[in-house]
Image (cartoon, rainbow, N blue to C red; front, side, top):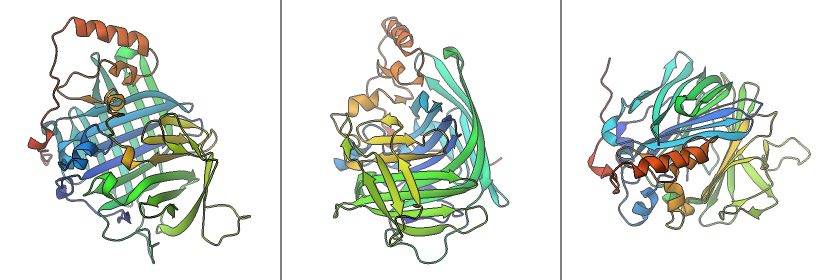
Amino acid sequence: MIQLDDPNSRLSLDCIEAPGSFLWWYLEITNVDGDGIVLIWAYGLPFLPGLAADARAGAPAAGRARPSLNVVTYSRGVPASYILHEYEPDDVAWDGQGHWRFGASEIRSVDAGPERSVDANLEIPIPGGDVLRARIRAAGPRPLAAVGPLPALLSTGSPHGWTPLVIGAVGTAHVAIPGQGFRFVVSGAAYHDRNRSTRPLHELGFRRWLWAHERRGTAERIAYALWPRDSKAPLGFGIEAAPGEPLKVTALEPTFVGRRTLPFGMRSWDSVTFRVPGADHADEPFLDFPLTHCVDQGPFYLRYLRARGGVGSLEVIDPDRVDLARHRPLVEMRVTRAGQRPSIWAPLFQGALDGRPSRLLRYWKSLLATPPGPVLRPDFQRRRSRPVEPR
């Protein structure tokens, strides 16, 4: 279902050519006050409208055909801004190493000695003529590859590979949307990883995925629970990562308390606890995460933050619920595409969350004053990403 990639391995450009492939890089910066930012740059992000439906219909798109940027900020544990923008492949480039260009935005994730640094300069259009501008920096020690036997859940040869890319990092982000009067600054603990696959998310052998991480000093604890399709019980594993030490990987037993169903149909719980099999329950668990602070609740995805005073996050994904026809109009409202007119409801979701009703009215007035734009989705599969020219 999943394999642990070597943190120091490099990917080939071929990994985004396979039909149904995806590849995303994730960067999170958070502090104990609940301020934070998440940046995801991706090819074939599984949550984009149409991707999973096309794959289920037997016409999966290559990851390179659907590049995107996603930026979300949180202020004191409450979402403050959101943007998910999809680019035309001809306007995106990747050198196959650590340099990307998405339209006017540039991102680097590069090694310098024993450390890795991430440097992002973003300029992303927002419906209504606004632009999100951001400068994001993070750096920390590179993880050392795991040694010794791995839990059976981490099967080698899986089409899906996950890779932690930095440990004990710190970062800073400055975000502004000048036309909306939005400014945001955060400094704190940084987390950076990567997910890649040559198959769609719903074909990877699990029907639910839960991922969580928690910063403890300069160390990181990361836990996964995956529900195999042929079993009702979840399987778990965890990674303890500290600067200068090999990744410590162990099998874990997840325990869930207080099962409940949320308004859009997703299953959740009051808390989840991960323990090493056979450990005394009086001992401190590997990871204990109360699910009391949900900051993103949708039909196939949930995101929780640690309560104030801690640093960490948790995600739940139901792959079989991604891109269902009954939910797609709701998802379309949260995505903009280059060369296409956004949903008439886009200002309610894109940009700063303050001032949304007034922006929505201004946007509607602008639509009445301009001729209709294209309504068909661009033929993404006929375009290819261009490599970054060496400097």
